[in-house]
Every structure is written in structure tokens, then in C-alpha cells.
Image 1: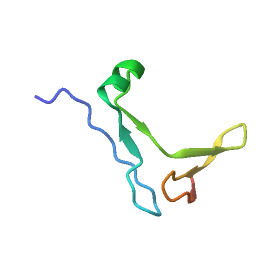
Image 2: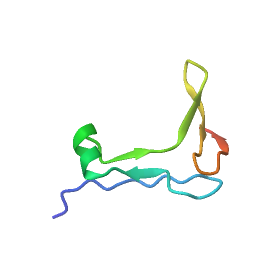
Image 3: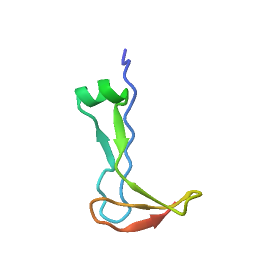
Length: 62
């Protein structure tokens, strides 16, 4: 029986790079997280209206 949660995949629509990073065991213990999204939120103080890829630096709407 598999007890682990499946890690999602999230790709940049332009370069196709996976934007989910699996944390090291030390980081997992420190932050109590297994993975993080590397996409950058572009906001206007109220809400995020676009995302930016840290690899190709292109922006797309939510």
C-alpha cells in the first residue's frame, strides 16, 4: 500500500519546464512541506493576476 501523497506536475506553457521542486529531506523537516512551486506570482497588491517562469522569464495569465 502506498502511503505517500502523489507530487503534482506543473509546467511552463512556454518552455515546458516542470515548475514543482521537491525539497531535500532537511528542508522537508524544517518547513513541513514535500514540494514547492517555483513559478513567480505577479500581483497588484490585491491579487495575483499573472505567473512568471523563473527559467524562461515569460509571463502568462492565470
